[in-house]
Image (cartoon, rainbow, N blue to C red; front, side, top):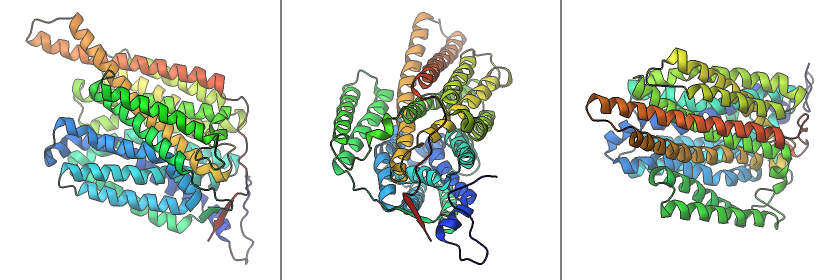
Length: 504
């Protein structure tokens, strides 16, 4: 039998808003998970629809990247602001504003009549996603206070955060192939309406009794820093690391980030109190989420290429091919947080999970032009999914452990920031590695032409994918070692109580 800081109301006594929120906590989890799924889906679901959107709206290949980049720039650069606003405005208020705004921008994007309208809508999705994502995670933090229940809740939430990208590939393929590319955006309206009804029905109003002031200099510097970093890596993906714009944006981002950190040590109302990230367990958790973000985007990107271009999979079949990975991820995410984490803490879960994921990716480095899905891809996917589930869900819980509920929003936003920036770094870095491997292989293996040239091109492409997988395996292994060294041994600290008021 579990205990909680909030007990059920005695029979005949009117139920308070706090008691009702607690009684409906598993429905609250369903609402939060649905919202999180919507945000994560949009990272990959639109990628499947891009060729069809390009044909429909008539924009060129050079402009196509902005449909993805606009979302990433707005989302990544405003997450910390969104997290602090949830602490200031109240978590439910911020959550519902984010949901409603995301739905409106999705409708605008689905109805786009030209390229500019689509890009503006994608940027708008990123803005409201930056409000929605940290509010959802901080609501989860303050809703589940019992350690055993919290473990199960974070297992479910972490599984969605880790596997939502693969589900996006499946859903995007199905909607694009069977309906129309615009439904890859319109589908958010359905999800958002259900989540909004649930939010107003089961989530109690929450506000801190000690509301911090907004750190305006911190907001400006960190938003500019994150924008510069994300844009710099996006530019590197398309124009290379030696491009002057790539260098300029990345240097500017690093300088602005240093200024931001300096400011945070000198203000009493810091946007990101450094005590949040300097704790060993939380710091290690943020690092794990960042490294996982680097690798996960690489897996989706290059394995999608292989499945469609080498094995001839349709978009729907490609999405289905990732389901075993999601199954392994869900299994270990829920088991690790509910059974293992409360007893042993997060250190070896995060470290072991990253090393298992590295082993799974290593299996994928053996792919060739003659490989098959069942024999050569499926085992690597399952093992990788199990490793990611064991690492990601405990990392998400560890990232907000021990923080005051007054800082839950910004601590949650930092998790999302690490994942988003990690994805940007991973996409740019691994795309560059793959491109270099492809060029080098073709230079070392000249072909005379005809069928031999076509076979060589296919072999070179597979070589570029396996080279990228090798680097992902190395990155995951390094993440496992760092987690073992950095994360503090023992159980997670309890989250301080009493700082959040829940109202009817």
